[in-house]
Length: 245
Image (cartoon, rainbow, N blue to C red; front, side):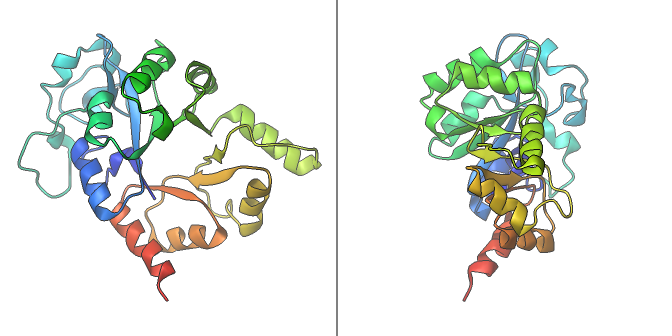
């Protein structure tokens, strides 16, 4: 069970408070989207424009870290009231706050590229062996893999998905390019035979983003290995119920 954007159903996305709540709810892995400020600080942010998470405007890569720290993410939060200001978190803060947790990092920014500064940060915090790296941009994925090959890469790329589909349709030999594949959830996409085929070819299957209890149960029954969810509290109840005698 992976807390999508830190568990954005339990707190503002990609924030430390959401992550703490997700772990308290029983999340197994934390997830964070990353971008970099104008002065080189890698931060947890899904969208380039901070307008989606604050009442301010401006692109993360054009703003300084100090400016981001003046913003309060409670402004866009629609859940239960939070008493203290909620700040955009740096990736370093997240890695330090959760030194033992596995963390899935999705690279959102492609210009300038993040591979080198991201991997430098992972090395300086001794975090590489507990990190999953992914991106919807092929170039970003493979650049990160080349820069820190000891990190686990999750395949979400168009190139790899196309190769997998062609192999399955034609029956030609194929081996997974990474130990985890991560296609988005679609009804009918994760039948037991589909998941087994991926397993037989060396690839665990994660999917995103699922909060519905019935769908979570179906994915577990099909053998899916990991699910990104906004609501770790709901997913924990579902998965624990499946394990009950």
